Image (cartoon, rainbow, N blue to C red):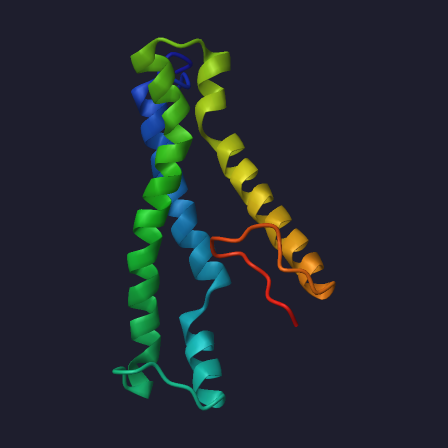
Length: 141
């Protein structure tokens, strides 16, 4: 069993991908309730253009299902990337784990959060921001 479930083995990586896809669907269903979202949209007088108000729940569920699969497969690819690099390229495990996986996701998430906090701080002090191009740019109040 230990040989089959080694981190560079095919069965381990297949099991990891299946777990990531399953828990992505599970977490999304627990946190985002399309019925509640549709109810809130209706109560606030909103609507989705081209969608009847009684079909909003089905439409939101369809959109969620279409977004979850590619997103979960992308996360699975990032999680399996170090094992793939180690096996195909022959890098040692210490090097291949630096080239992808959870550490990459954490670094990007922390960087985006830090940039948003710095931009919000600069916005409160009436500055233009750190960067001139891109999506995150503060405006003078």
